[in-house]
Length: 217
Image (cartoon, rainbow, N blue to C red; front, side, top):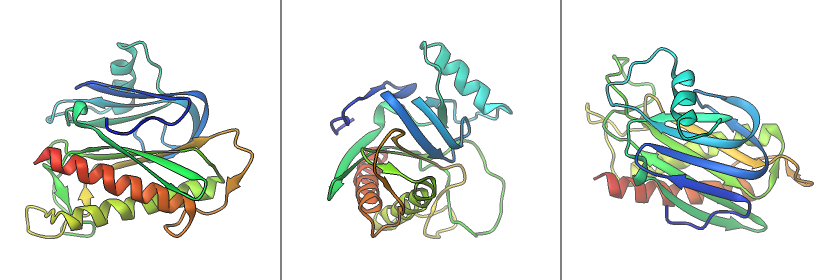
């Protein structure tokens, strides 16, 4: 971790588990395998599994791994990456501050829309963004798209390719989590890249992912 946590947020991280906890309730939009969709909660985790992982109940496996640490995650991600290599960064635009927490598993890169083939093993880019400002639910979903755009731009900037030599858009198992204060009085209606939340989230993601890629090489 390289960035200071937002007020009321704590992050604990070692090789096998990354846990983000909030003093106040969060509204969470995500593509997470555990607790994905639109959710409320205070605890987000990313759990490490072997690169050969092929479990059929990943949500249950995440819960078991977290429970061993005394945690009950509301949202959970999975990766084969050493989680001590997670990188974080903050960015601010107007009154909005975003913190991006990223892990970059690049052993199984993928190009969206390319030739379909079996996905061998785990290789995952997990992107978590925490905001200090409220969002409407639609803006939270919009922000997932913005963060994904930031991911693709970062991979392109680093020249990350697939095994076939195509520019990689990510991996086949990437996930995005966006969280904001559930009780915020003001809520932004949009989360695109030209909005304050979108700009801050994208900038934090690009910086954190760039650092994570640098550590993975």
